[in-house]
Amino acid sequence: MSTLTYMQLLRGNRSFRRLLSGQVVSELGNWFNFIAGLGLVRAVSVAAPEATAIMLVARLAPFALFAPLAGAFADRWSRRTVMIVSDVARAFVALGFLFVDGPEDLWIAYACSVAGSLLTAFFEAAKNGAMPNIAGGQGLLAGNSLMYSSRFLLMSFGAALGGWASARFGYQVAFIINAVSFLVSAYSIWLIPEKEMREEKVDETDKLRETEAHQAKKRPRFWTDLGEGWKYIAQHPMVAAIIGVNVLWATGGGACNLIYDRLGGVVFAGQGGMEGDAGVAALYATVGAGVFVGMLCARRVGTHVELHGLTARFIGWMLFAHGILFAVAGLMPSFWLVGLFMFLSRFIVGMEFAVQETLLMRLVPDNLRGRVITTDRAAEILVMSISTVFAAWSLRAISPRTLTIISGLLSAAPGLLWLALFASGKLRMPPEVEKAQKRDDEKEVLQVSAG
Image (cartoon, rainbow, N blue to C red; front, side, top):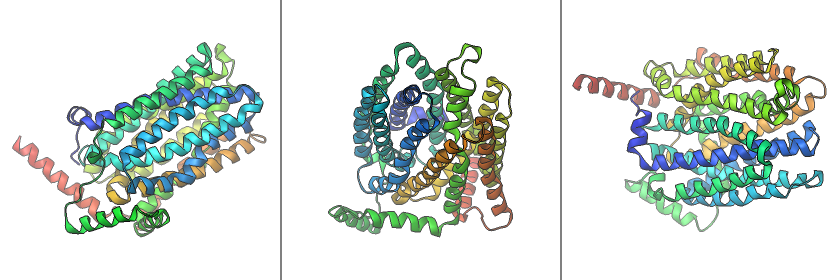
């Protein structure tokens, strides 16, 4: 399938550059906050796994509960305004962590995590809804790859810097950096014209719908809007299957953050002179680097699999392989071998996710995209939250290594289910996607011939 290269997209699309630059800055600050927040809770609670689990759930559950509502809100109102307001509000929330001094103040850390997660749900809904419009059809795969690869590069870089800054200057510095980063992101979004974040209406039917939507703003119809998104998912098997696979993946993936914290902060703490915060930061940096490299490869690999009609098999086998590699990491005797297998696991899933996310964005129409994608995120993160709670409880009976193996196997299972659905004929690529790929392939052949 014909797509823009990374450099073509970056050079020719100023609005995408602004969106990307804002995310780079805010993600860097966010990972400073995440590592510092986990370290602060671990220190204040004397490394109690329950306290860490509460912190993780506080960052996950609100997103899961409010993301569908946020998607309906972003589809109805100005996506640009939603992102700017969310960023400014998150800047103030980030400063709330400065007031945590002892065990009696842990509720402040939890409350700030809840508020930040809620605001992130609105920001992500608006951003995901606007991405196909800003990047364009030919730039969507490259845009998604750059967006997510930069996010995980900053996970790697930000986690490492956050661990170092927390150890050198204290947790407070990381929280201040996070607050400033959200303000920079808000300014970057403010520079993007509103008209570039939503499809233009061109025919009379669309104009009528636009008028009705404008009139409907006078009264909230969020539950109706949510129902439209759920109805669309139920009527489109491929969209429902993608969401279902992500939800099943979350049964194992929900334990990942707890695994990184336990392995780096407890199991391997002190080995080689590495402190707990440094170990956690190193694991996050490793898995972030893996996803980043995988995402960078996703445009070229994704173009190849689409061109040869291998998208479905690619998604299934990559999901299976990444889970198996993650499970193998739990068997490794040293911290560095654990990191190697986790890097490989995340490298593979990075490529898979970019291809899968691009497929989902192409399948869903603009007026429903925010609701459908945030429903996907909400369902996935809700299951991750539940998985985190069970994982923390299970650590009373099993070791973090055993939890790693179980998590990997659970994460691999959706890949086999996906392949089985296609092999049995119960699921197939929608005709409109196949036709679109065929048209793009023909255009590419003509371009090569003309050149």
